[in-house]
Image (cartoon, rainbow, N blue to C red; front, side, top):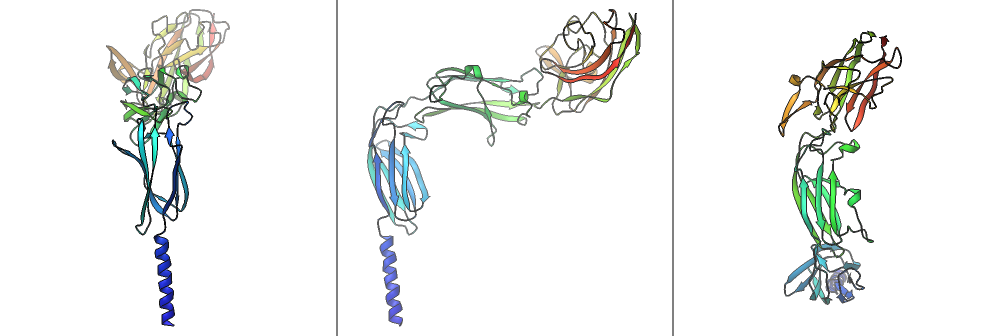
Length: 401
């Protein structure tokens, strides 16, 4: 009985050894063996094939007198047939013309190693890189908060050959994609960007109402990859500060107009409370609270012109014949209660997050309204962007004339 088990054990051991010593790597081939990696060539790529008799770690590389070019390195593979479509590029560069040895190696769990080679010739390769010339990012300090100052980043470059270009913002961990301006987006038939100037207008998502990336230091990265896999990268630093979606609201009991009966030639007064309810500073401008318009004036006639992104409290009324909404507008707070920033010789005023201000003013009714008792109301205006709050607290005012 013991002799039988010894015999059986020996037979099994011999079978295992025989299997372990059987050919591990077979059917190594490539078709075609000559390629021309460039657009339009009929033999742009070759198909590398191989088979494994059992599980093994596989490496695949090309080699010539100039060095070694790795396609796969020590990657685990199950038994079976495998193929690699190779278009002539390694590590984002197309290899130069010449003859290369393609080497496939496999090593199983028992340390058995097998290696096979095949020759590949590359001719007429397109090794020209798709350059991103004159790559610029301006400004490099960015405040995406819709205050009309440094709210956008313009990215420009000149592309020297058709390529797929990806532009994004990154902090090293997260990527925020940036889209090209539609009027400069020109594509070839294979959806590669065309040769020529390209421009990106980056707003960090603010225009769509999305929150911008957090304040901090970032990098703008542009990657261009041509049809052969040649790749170049350009980058520039970008700092985001004071970013956020601006938000303000008329609070409390909204506002109050008085008196409710105004003889022609007298003044209608008001008081309103406004709060910055967002996380971004809100830029505002005059006239300061307390200013009194007459009905033949508006903010332009007193030289307090509209500016993109500016926030002001407005008053409008029925029968407004001036031709624009909220012709009477006031700054969100007095100069001495707002945060001041000096820029290019000019003082800029901000209502800071969480800050509450009371705004008062008046309109001297010097012109007859279209009706005896027109309605007046308040509005919160972000100029050239949107009417944030409209028709707040409409109130009938009797004008005695």
